[in-house]
Length: 300
Image (tube, rainbow, N blue to C red):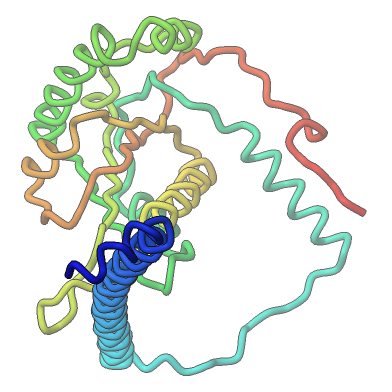
């Protein structure tokens, strides 16, 4: 050791630099190993996550395929959907113009009438109106509607009680001042005499889903849009039959009315139409409809 001391004394700068370099190299090596271990761990986690994600996607795809196959089997089981010849006779241009204008003129007389007479309306008329609603298009032809027709006075009274109780809360608490003010020209309040005075109530339920023969849920595509379109058909049919109605949306009443009517849980109340003849001397607001140029955009 004594032999090395003169050397260390003479070359201490060189020895120190070498020592520092060695220490730095060791530390850098350890740091690289740490980074490599972290990178390997991250890669393993990413790989496992990718594998799990692929497994989930694969399982989801398999479930979707099974659902589609189930729906296809159910559709084929329910009915033989074979193409048939579309029965159609093309009208002349003049006849088409005439028919479209006549229909428009009749529909333009349609108004929302709240003063409805208790004069009886034949059941056959109501049945024809409902059948017309049933001709409406629907997503994947699921026909997701149920039209509940009520003429029983006691049941109409119970429906009115449920609706008026909720409507009073709506007007006083839920709707807000702006909404209530916007309804003032219409003259409507939470009191709904037409619910018991009209000879018929048509309650329109949307079927959120259906059921297959094995009891499993059957998808009803675009159920609310489909039922809304069917309601338009009903309104046209009511007008064509010489009757009146007012489209009502009984807010927060659906569950109670569904229970009252004994409807299944997959049905949700969407709209209610009181139907009958107008009272003698019935009045309506003097509203004007938008002109054609405000509702139609034509690209040539």
